[in-house]
Image (tube, rainbow, N blue to C red; front, side, top):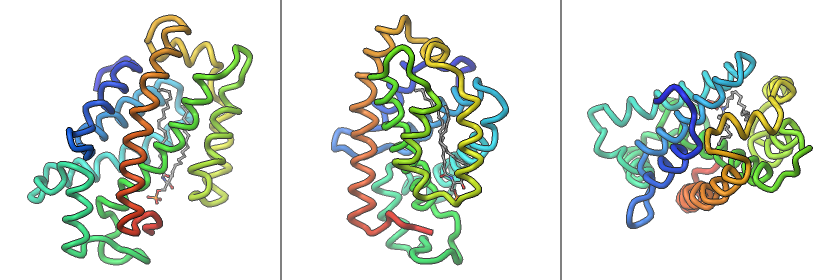
Length: 211
Ligand SMILES: CCCCCCCC/C=C\CCCCCCCC(=O)N[C@@H](COP(=O)(O)O)[C@H](O)/C=C/CCCCCCCCCCCCC
């Protein structure tokens, strides 16, 4: 992971994550999240409880990828097939497989929906729009529905510490605001496509509510 965040790299990793037949490479999916974590880290310590959770989930998936069954964790599709066929997923309550690849990736998948909603708001926002409001509205529409009260409160506090829209655009390292908006316009369809492919796969296998 490079030190300085770049929106262009996020775009490239999500683009690389799609195979020719529209499967999703876990390696690049994780790489996309690593870039996003580096962005979040640059915003200050108030977000560290969120980064830690994402890093922990990335680590779980990386361990599967480099482990003895790594060849089954190349794509999200092959992971789902392997874990379901081998009964490696706790389907209704947490038991002997509390950290399966499927449930771990589901948490990131739900967060990807937040990202999609937030970036779309940012892309179409007016100069005086507040990032905290955009973040919070996107959160209420997505991830918040899966988080308990305490987490929602902590997240609400963190949102208040978000920098303004101008700082956000600068940290993206993608040129002036017109160029950032253009790059967001290029990135969003890719993020949406990765999200939708994963959503359809999880829905088809009844995996959207894994504990
Ligand atoms: C293109 C650049 C602009 C935007 C860059 C945004 C960078 C954001 C990076 C990461 C986003 C947050 C991802 C959060 C993943 C949360 C996964 C999750 O739901 N975990 C919970 C459930 O896990 P289990 O307990 O079931 O294992 C866990 O309980 C949550 C813990 C922490 C709270 C997560 C809150 C997420 C809020 C999303 C907004 C982040 C705001 C960042 C602002 C840039």
